[in-house]
Length: 313
Image 1 (spheres, one colour):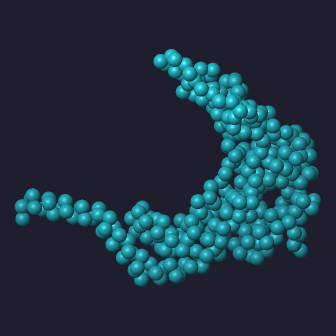
Image 2: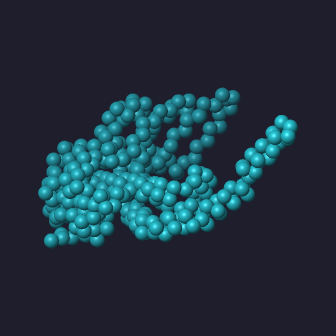
Image 3: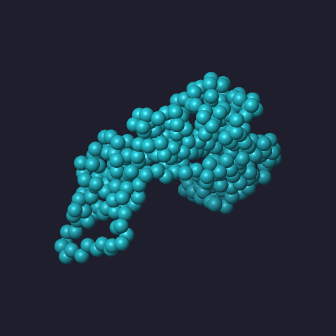
C-alpha cells in the first residue's frame, strides 16, 4: 500500500471521526449503555436532593430584595433628547454619559475619590443614610446575598460531584452537556447572585474621555457598609444592628463550633459532604435575640426554612 493511499485512508478516518453522525452514534451508545443506566438509578436520591436545593436557591432569589440607594443625577434625563449635530469631521463623542439610578455622573475628582474611599462616597452620592432603617435595608440585602452565594456554591459542588461519580467521557460534557444533565435527571440552575452594581462616571464635555469607578455590593462590601453604619448610628442593640454583627467570619466560626452539623436534625457534612448549612438565631432578632455565639446555631437548609422566625424549644 502506497504512502498516498495510507494518507488518504487516514484523512477519511479523521473526517469520519469528526463527523456529527459519528458523535451522535457514540453519544447514543453511551446513554443507552447498561453502565450509565445503572449509575443513574444509583444516584437517584442524590439527584432528588440536588433539585430540591436548586428550587430553594430560586426561592431565595425570588423572595429576596437586592436594592439600596440611588443617585439623583440625570433623574430627568429621559425628558429630553440629545443629538450631536456637529459638522466637524472629527467628532469626539466616543464617551457618552449613562443615566440610571445606580449611576452617578460626577467630576473626575469625585470619581477618583470614590475609587479610593468607596463606602463613604457610596453613602454620600446614593442617599444611603446613617439611620436604623437604612441599616435594616443593608442587612436584608446582605443576608440575601450571603445565602445566595453559599447556596449557589453548594449547587455547583453537587453538580461537579454527580458528574465525577458518573464519570462520562470528555466529549459528552463538551458536546452534549445539556442532554447529559437531562438524562441524569438534574435540574441545572442558571441563577446568579444579583449583586447591586453602582457606578461613578465622569464624561468630558466633548465626550473625548471618560473614567469610571465601579462598586459591587458583594458580601465584603456590604459588611464594610454595615460596619460603617453601625459606627455612625451607634445603635447595635437594634435588630438591624444585631444583623450587622453577623459577618462571614462569625458564620464560619459557628459552623466550625457546631462541627458542621445541623443542631436540629443531626445531619452533618460527614454524612452528606455537600450539605447546605446556614446559621440561625435561636431567639430571632425580631424578638430581641442577639448575634452572640450562645444565641447562634447551625441548621441545615431544610430545618432553617421550616423554623422561620419561630423560637424552637
